Every structure is written in structure tokens, then in C-alpha cells.
Length: 134
Image (cartoon, rainbow, N blue to C red):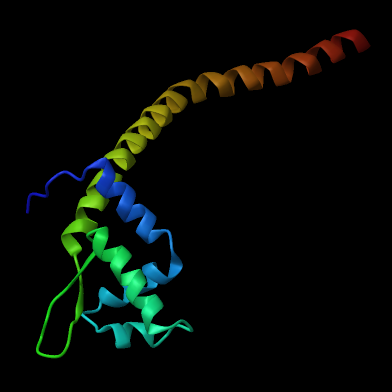
């Protein structure tokens, strides 16, 4: 599946929406399947109106959508948007991992030299001290 690139404005809205713990909990619940506002409001000590406002923020961010099923209006997770966000994050994660691998390679190449220099430096003062005692 090819995902369309996410614009900076889309990312801003999505990350801002996910900054709130209630909205993250709603996303976590929706990852198990669609739910109504009443079902989403159950675990919270806030009004259904407040939960509806949280859902609106998630909707504007493109993270959830609502459908109509007779009298029900279930809320659905928009997994494609989360995948696009993950792809954006992965691009930078992969760059960082590549830099760490390069750093590891440099450290591995220099480690034997450093160890030899350290062991030479460590024995030199002892030899000097023995020479002074003689």
C-alpha cells in the first residue's frame, strides 16, 4: 500500500491531537474496533460532550472518522493516517540508526588502538616509579 505524503500541517494537527492523554486512550480503544461516543465515554470521568469534543479534534486531525449506521454513529480509527505518521517517524529513525551504526564502526576501529595506548600508559608510570626506586 502506497501512502500519500503527510503535509506539515497534517502532522501538526495529528501530533497535537495525540498530545492529550484522553485522545490517546480513545485511539487505543478504537484500535480494537469501532465504538460509539457513549462507549468511548465509559472509562472517563468526563461528560459525553467533552468526549465528543475530543473526537472532533481527532476527526480534524484525520485520525478518526464517523459513519452512520441507522441511529448509531460509530467512530472508526483511520489506520492509514497512523501509518503515514509512522512512515514519517521511521524516515528519521532510520537516519538516526544509520548515524549510530557509523559511530559504532568508528568506535570499533579505534577501540583496539585506544586499548593499547591505555595499557602502555598504565605501565609507563609503574616502570618510571620502579626506575626511581632503584
